[in-house]
Length: 138
Length: 201
Image (cartoon, rainbow over all chains, first blue to last red; front, side, top):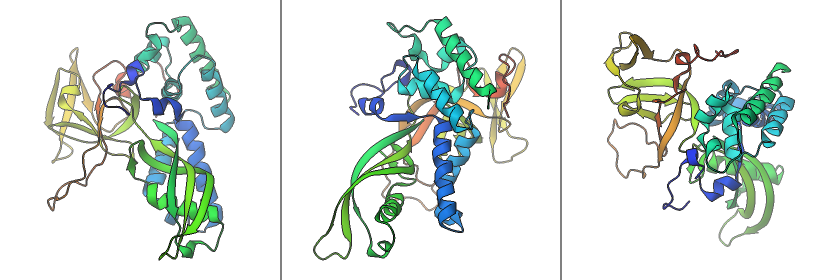
């Protein structure tokens, strides 16, 4: 990343290679790491030997900080958020923090309200409403 | 947050791993090389998959084959301006230290704690200081009773020290500086009165 432009996610200046890299929500990482853990358990009798500290602790963190546990819910969340002209980064922050109101959402993701973007409060509220419906059918 | 990153690297596979499937051998070598290491793209947390494997040539004088591998890894990569949930680890007169479990070098320096505040010796922990936010006559203690949301202010990658004192803290290749001085930040219990949250712990 070039050192000239200061990085600032609030204004969505986060380096080209990250706009291309796929961002993952905590709940998605939770599914990925759990799947790996299961694979390890199938292969050897004592998976903890192979699973390093950082893997185990990351799994703990994402499990604790994911709102959505089952794969269908996770898929739905990404689907809903993808319909709203968000960047990968914004999508993941919203999916991770699950704000309840448009005001909270804008506080966490200020770039939603930058000039030229078409996110009215009503549109944001509708999106958060759709998200909260996913939680109910967990 | 976590990102999926595709990399290409030359991987040398020691011969003793070649009994089983090649992909498993390569995964094992990649894990040793990348897991828990801070790269320019972040802290590697897991190998996601292998996209392609080429080569397998044995270089002169070496007993092991070398492959050119394209693969993807899951990295933890905080962004300036991102809001992250963490847990309290410890505090001293300089400020707070927060942890994510797998990453423990998040610091909130004193100027980024909401004012007015005060710092006092922790009555439960002789060696530590604890921070208390004073707001509208009420006192809010910052401790490990609930999760703490912070916003990333800065990420630094200190250079590897050449010499270290015996009792120096373990070297941190990536240090995140955060703030809790804004709406919605700090211990979540400070904001629970405002917005009802159904399944917080």
